[in-house]
Image 1 (cartoon, one colour):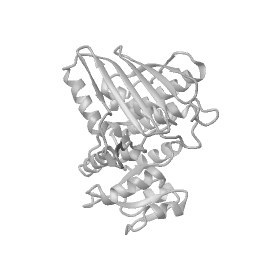
Image 2 (cartoon, rainbow, N blue to C red):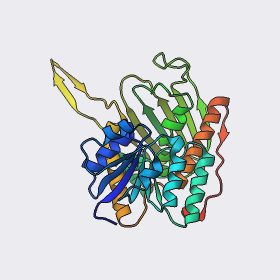
Image 3 (cartoon, helix red, strand yellow):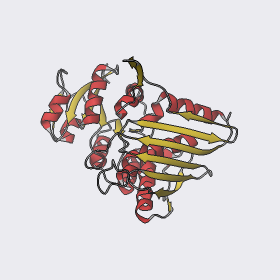
Image 4 (cartoon, one colour):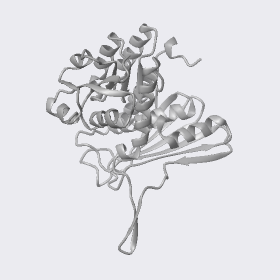
Length: 339
């Protein structure tokens, strides 16, 4: 491997462009070797000012570009399966943004393909595992000082949703973060989902069921509730409170900049996930680069990506039917067996 890990970034949209910037200016030990996006002009804009980067509209051409030793997938979820399998075929380590693959059948194919290789190649981009507050909460729960976790209360709010957002995407795109965070914090699989639908907010686009209250049951008996509100209008907020047998702990209340002027004070509220979780993204990519340069793969794996997709699918069925919906998981391959 060269002194700097050569990375092919697939996707040059909002997330991909931010990762190009991160690899170039924030994370040491790596360089952007290639970028692929169907929109060549968008790809060129993302790499503007960075020397030595080749731009392609074809994924496989980018993977085969000179100097590529790793892959960061930030393209839309529906094309992740093809990109992951192409990277696996070349033996390239991958950091893949969530959702790994939106549908559980496709996600399972990725798990099985990696298992056939007999070694891990993919880290899945559930960046909350790298957030300082989430890591602190995880350490506290694992330490057992508060006793057995009984409930997680979660809040996930966005200023506004993209124009293409559908009611089911509140679960599959937004709550997927809480799905993974809950599995990780509790160390348990989620076994059933119920979705409650209050009267939609006047700020939600016509026909969008927003907000929603999503209730998960965990195999160890804990309950997880998530308020998802993607058109709250005032800021980006993510909070989580763990209620345990001997106490509780809450994250997400960290204060940001306070501006005092004109006889008053105003607290800044983040407007975007790239602001709220900037440090987590930096830490996540840095961990991937460092591990890859040592010939290792760490962090959330393809089973985590599959489980999140399977739980989200059950959540969509619960949203559509109004009924409590069990989560169906395939047998876990030995490669991803924690025992």
